[in-house]
Length: 349
Image (cartoon, rainbow, N blue to C red; front, side):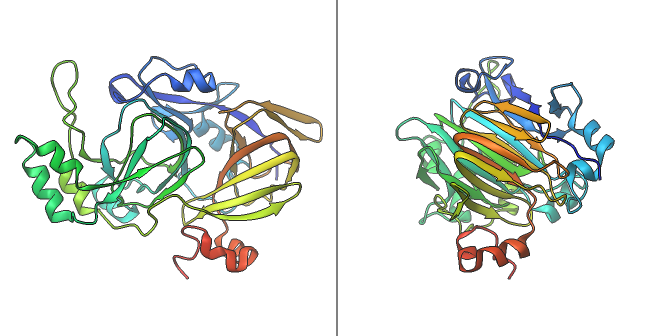
């Protein structure tokens, strides 16, 4: 197999009217070359048509996959490209949403993938909150009744009272399986890893209007049809393990993706094995070093590690977020009793 060295990805952006809740934190905090001051999403690794991320030569991810095949993506990774990695700046609160699973999306969205996702809070103003599920005293029937009366006085308050709110702080990790009612609150900057899908069912948008007084479309019937209660409410603790001179904390390993945090003190070696690509998002400065090559990085960069990459060292004192397509049986064997602490890892056992 051809050896492909690690490389840096350059993002596509969703902005302006597409993200009326976005801001300029991606520029201020990470130096992203955002197109305007309402830029909500930096699609760091994306194969979505019209929103394809690129390497530093300008080659799109779709072109790179066509050129390198399994040497890039790995022997265990099928088609289409399975993951989408974003950085999200929520200056204002997002709409309340659900996403379908693969079966529903295939049946109702022209064969697209469903959408399970996860968030890592990178920055949050004091008291910032997100929505995760329904309040204990509000079921789907009560929510539907409140939504159906959205034009009445006090309706917005009744709808808002149906949701369950979680206060967040930097470092918190949340797992959002398909069907979970959720929304990012205002004043939050986060990392999102998800299935490669753009299917979103907007349940509630806070009666928000554009410059012409229009409101964005809602998809209430679809949103409630796919709704499921998640047992993963609240921030995840994960399974932490010593790793070299640092540590590795695995939070999620479901059928779609694994998410872990590498805490590096000086250096940490990585051994790509040809089975899956991985995506590294550093939260500090450092450098990847391999035989005959190196790649410096800064906070908020995203580094694509091909499945056929050489053994390399991460040098620095920092945390790195790592996502990839997991070998779940191997992870269960490696973790033993700790596997119970990893969201999604034991769901099919």
